[in-house]
Length: 129
Image (spheres, rainbow, N blue to C red):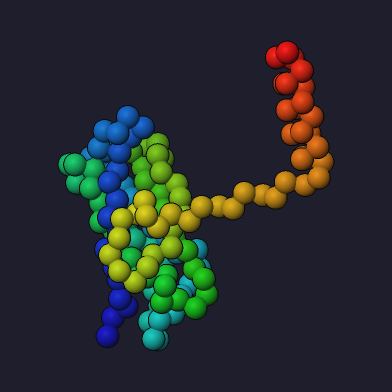
């Protein structure tokens, strides 16, 4: 038996929506996971095709017990610049990368920040009158 994987599809595109052919996409687990005696692959790297399409075969985090996530990074082969850096949690079925992004929670606003926001709002109201 081998460790199961699912296809995670990613359409690599620049900020103008143009495909990034040859984009290098790497997904790396943030901690070691063991599934039925097998160690889940720590890192997977693929190269996008001429249309910017990349398919990563990743171990599903949904099968884990440690709450692991993948850190995903995409790099433009021409410039070397990173144009995607995100975190995903892979379900136990094929999916698109944009559907499984884990958003970082916003930090809570404390009382002082709430007072500052209220004061700024009041000031803006006064200055427009």
